[in-house]
Image 1 (spheres, rainbow, N blue to C red):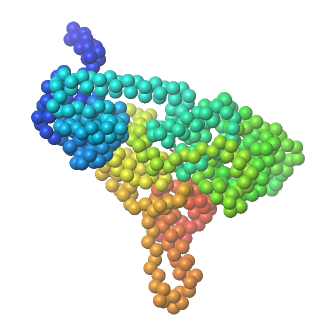
Image 2 (cartoon, rainbow, N blue to C red):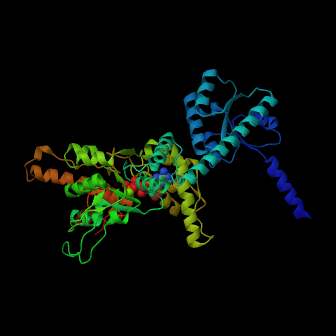
Image 3 (cartoon, rainbow, N blue to C red):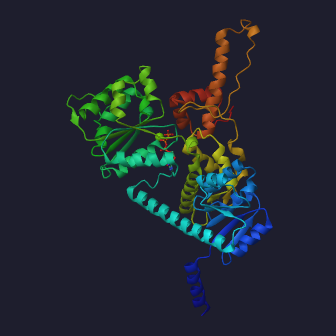
Length: 502
Ligand SMILES: Nc1ncnc2c1ncn2[C@@H]1O[C@H](COP(=O)(O)OP(=O)(O)OP(=O)(O)O)[C@@H](O)[C@H]1O
Ligand SMILES: [Mg+2]
């Protein structure tokens, strides 16, 4: 009996679905008036901007009534409004003000407020504005849900991003995937180049063919050629058996040539021929083999600069960059950080659960304050670095929620040098003080410059290791070979995580 009642009550709740409103107002009379005007809705109040930001994470409210006088001056208020909208993109904000000026109202609505209410408005008007805001929010959520569904159906769903830069990029990916054109993806380390390459393959006409990814910086030039184009039996010492090569393995599908800026002149020549003739010549063989492969290449280097310096063939550049795609660094689309953080945490949580059973405790949420801190950082290592930081924060954190203090130890507040594209600096480096008076006094110019170079080199390698926790990736980020990072780590006494070792 009571069970049945429960069910009835539950059904009724869903139908009328209690509305949740947050009133951000320091004045108790304002709060009380909102409460009476919105009878039947669940009204909660907070009196400070910080409390407001904490409460709205994850959009638990249908509508937020926001008194801008809390924020200080108009600009502060607009900044706060922007942050509310960022941490709770699904929440509709209505300005709730004693004396709203027209100019402020216009700016607030441009910044994403839906409407402006005067606190002295009649109760019925307040109610009708809030009702309208609720329907607007429901509609916006529905649009977002459908858009997500469309994108998942298209295969773009894994790529998170609502910023206008990301929207442009997704539109471009969608168009280019449908063609068979060669694509060159350019972007800093960790921006998602490989994810985009896979997506281009997966949503394009070759999706049922193979996708073969290869990091061109991983092999010495002599081996690279055989790896890509194959070789005949006995073509060189050690070539005991013939090899088909990655191009032939990718036949009918896509080959992803990562770090294309690292290939040397002889492989550049061969690759140019392959792109022109659509055939390969295995090492040691004389008969060309026709291939049908789409090429997607990626680099974090400035290929045009390499062309200008004569290190990369210009004609090859143009063959590759039929469609150039520039992936924006994370610091240029910080508004995507909340979504990305939520996506990364949800994915890790899912993985932790399936690994350790449903008992696994893994934080699934992050506070607004912590998010704000993530948004202030420059992210030289982009999304990969965001993933690393969140994983480490998750380990340090002891609840369901990552809080700002869980980020304390992760180096997000250290000053960040202005790294060039694809550059490596995380920290600032203090150069050794050089007393020019004493130049020539035991230390020659070469000793001094060597000392400066060693200081910079050691600091840059340590910083890259601290960030990546992996010498191979750190080497890639620094633009040096794996062999050389290991040699230098040894010389400078650095461990794999960048800390000093004996
Ligand atoms: N827009 C995005 N949405 C969700 N996850 C992303 C997005 N972009 C990148 N990632 C994730 O970030 C990580 C780094 O991406 P990826 O390996 O594609 O970058 P990359 O540019 O190839 O980096 P690197 O230069 O270090 O090789 C991956 O785990 C990827 O899934
Ligand atoms: Mg990559």
